[in-house]
Length: 218
Image 1 (spheres, rainbow, N blue to C red):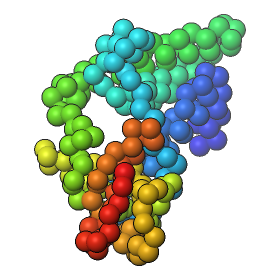
Image 2: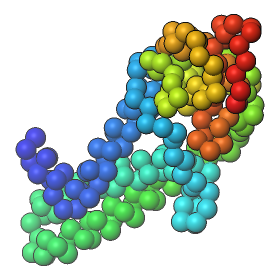
Image 3: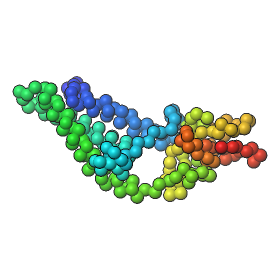
């Protein structure tokens, strides 16, 4: 085990090792976010457009950036670990800097090629997937998945017209009248989307059980 850690934390595998830790943490966060547990909402998600520039030049335009990067880092890490292990066992009389650089280049190149080959069958799935616009979700009922929904944080689960379950960032309206029971925004509560904030990139929601005489402005 100590030998494995020594290789993983040596050059060049270490270049990918820390990235691999971030990849694992990211996907664990995604999995936890899809489960019925409380998570900390740090704001609207940042979306990466893989449709142009560098990524599209390598044929990654139809696949989400996070999927491509995760595969690239994982494959690059595997290649560099195996390459470093082989170099050490071969006991070659070549400067470590030279062999390390060669293994790093191989990791980057093979990782990119492998990511492209693995994402190719996924591209059609993303291409055929129906795009759900923000306006399509207005008026739909969703279920709160975080501990509560506030002016600054909150997530809810919603089903679009195609039957896909989405986890969206939701907020209470800043124009909401006083006196609404906070329990109506607690986890498992049903809320309805009534608007989308283009600036903050979040959906505004109101409790389904809101009294009929209460009017909330966007």
